[in-house]
Length: 128
Image 1 (tube, rainbow, N blue to C red):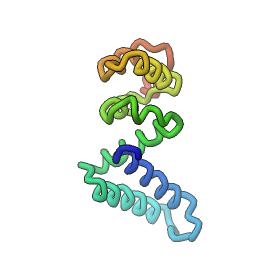
Image 2: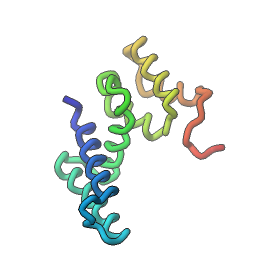
Image 3: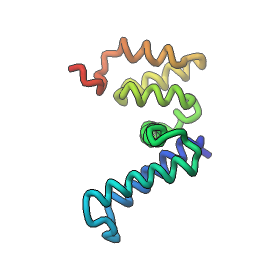
């Protein structure tokens, strides 16, 4: 069973897909969709006891990050996954993090930041 923050992120993602594709044509305007998205984040925030809507969004980002690499749920803790999302690292760099963590279990937040700063891969930091 995935950690609660992954469950929260998955729940948000699925609900947002329902809103996006709107099979039953519930949302007539853009504002209706925006309100529905906000409501999803608020409902999940309350259900899982998240501190803020921002934390709910972060759970969704983490859920998306680990979707193709389920092993990451067991290798990294919430703060490490959160750091990777906040750094907006590219997939090749995520693979390096996984390899480093498998080699050295003590690989943690300082190492993630250090490797991200020295990496040749581009980041989505907007510094180009």
